[in-house]
Image (tube, rainbow, N blue to C red):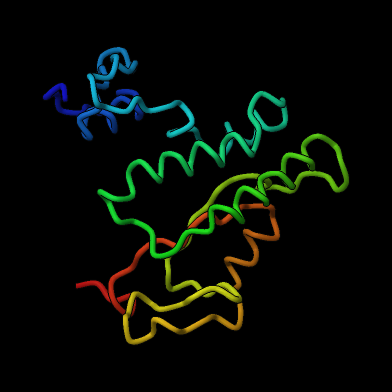
Amino acid sequence: GTGATPRRGTNRRARVAASHGQGGNLRTGYMSQPEEGEREMNDRDYMSATEAIKQFKARKLSPVGLAQAVIDRAAAVEPAINAFAQTFFDEALAQAKAAEARYAGSGKPARALEGLLIAVKEEAPITGHKNTLGSLALRDMVADHTAGFVQRIMDAGSILPAKTATPELACAP
C-alpha cells in the first residue's frame, strides 16, 4: 500500500484502491503497477451504472464482458470478504448473453437496467432460491415469491449474480 490517507476530492478509484492497499495514486487518480502477487484492479471494477449503459449502447462494452469481469473479481476477493450467501453466476452469464442480444438489436429492445449486475441482500426473497435470512435454522427455506423491489429491477433488465450475506435473521446490533 501507499500509506497515504484518502482525501476529499480525489478520484474514487484511487481512494478505494489506496484504502485497500492497492497502490492507487491519490494525486493523479491513476493506479500504480501492481507489486508481485497483487491483482490489478480493472476500470470495470468501479464503473458507474450510467457509464456501463452508455458503453453497452455504444457497443464498447458487452454485458457478457462486464458479467465475466464481476464474476472474476468476486472469485478473487470472496474468500477474504465472505460477502455472498448465494451466487448465481451461470444464470447471470446466460442473462448477460440475452442482454447482449437486446443491445445488438436482436429481438426486444434493451430495458432501462439491461445488463447491469445488481446483488440483493439475502433477506430479499427470489422465487425458487433459498431464503434463509442468514440463519442455519432456515437453511432449507426456499422462497415461493419474489420481493416487489427485486421483481422491478429484474423486469427492468438487471442481472442478479448473487445474494449478499446478512446477519442472522437480518438483525444487526
